[in-house]
Length: 163
Image (cartoon, rainbow, N blue to C red; front, side):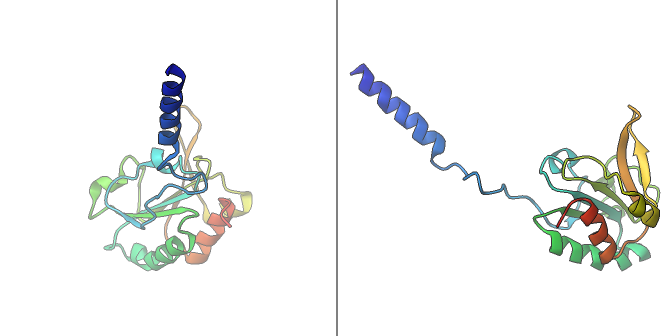
């Protein structure tokens, strides 16, 4: 009787653990929408294994408006392979969080490993990235100030490892 009871309990536990679980081949659902009204949760985004481009601007800013279609196309093209996010910092002041914004538009770039982009020499010359250090003296952020085209985003995402 004890053995039968143990087998029933063990079967129930094993069945309960596997029934309704997500198959290993399915990825969790992420929010790949372009616009955000809140500060991005970089801790969560950078744990997804996908590169991240975060753009801070405003629809009231001429260069930002000019670049916005490139952001939309890039977001659609790379959906599921990279996060491309836009925050309107004039409408949603808290959306910038603690990011060191000096001008808009400004973009920040992170690798799939959750690290700030360290651009190749060629890319660094072309885009003149700003490199920020953290309090520990280590590279903490890579930024670009000003507008970018869809082709520019493609080039940067290629360097970020997106195919």
